[in-house]
Image (cartoon, rainbow, N blue to C red; front, side, top):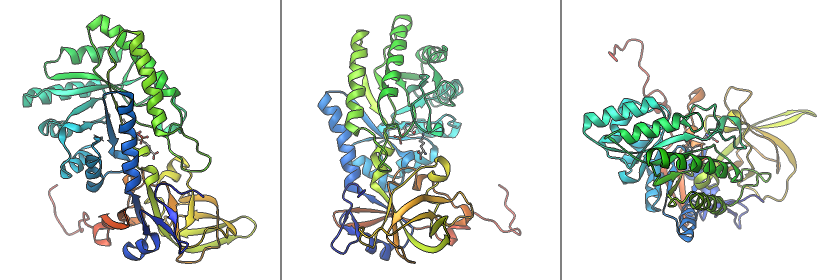
Length: 439
Ligand SMILES: Cc1ncc(COP(=O)(O)O)c(C=O)c1O
Ligand SMILES: N[C@@H](CCCC[NH3+])C(=O)O
């Protein structure tokens, strides 16, 4: 059986999460609905922090809010004492709306706008991760204008190909992100930052990709970075007080996935960082990481209702649900795989193999191919596991489908944290032909 965190099958034979029967969640909030197991998010957050404490490393664990950002989620991150990585004005605004402590916010992105940088400086956020030369200049001019000094990291691209889907690789030389470590761009950026009166260069940042199952890529990246840090110590007298090694720790979407445990990622990376610092006679820098998926991925479950069925004799059985690529675009985008069960039926009587179709007008809107299930009937509830990361955050209104609500469950209580979009919401920004608007 493939159950995470507090998920279990209760005495009624129903899936229960956080002590709440999913059949009741569906009665109360309808479908589709994203359900988050809050105890599991807390456990993961504490696990990362405890590992660093145990290893005696000064660290910041910054939750990558691109994985799943809402005001309530950001408040939960604050409760757990993590930092927060934001990647746009919208994510920053969400953090501010949640009253997240500004000094623990880190701002990412490969094309931050003038307005976004102004917003970051005005709110005195903890750190800006500068991605490119254009941004270095733009940020300097914003700081000049506002007579401010910004704490920054420089994002470097180490030239590492992590083993993951091509679309979620970021550390290779041919990447849109960061200053190249090998060709001299990163060295120039360090020099420029050190010479600026408006920038306080704390150190370097590197993120090699997402859904990575081992530490080989992280270790190679750390080695390349330390080799350069050693050169720069001699050339510019620069010492990195912070080293941010990004996120990307993989999770188990299916029984075939075999990532190492979150604590093992940290232990192996820190071992290498200590060895490198020792080899170059450097002080071990403060280590920051940015897990997104590994904090929230398996804490999220999407509940759908089964609707139509189509049998293509001797070929395939299709079961359609009341959501699809509008609430989970990952299968269409990355051929991502998921496990699912019927949430309102005992698990033991698997009778058929079906393929789960979404309701969008795209042949590619298939959530799961060839899933063994009990014989499902109309209105049965399908629970798709591990949808907590990049599900709600990448949801869209394709076919003008309203986005589902988000419900947090913990200790037997269900709490609505994002309400369901309505058809009124769908036309909220539309203007009729007769309306004249200036901009
Ligand atoms: C800069 C940066 N940090 C952190 C993350 C979080 O990655 P993940 O959700 O795989 O942990 C991402 C996304 O890949 C990212 O681009
Ligand atoms: N959105 C991607 C990961 C990209 C992470 C952001 N750099 C996913 O669903 O797997």
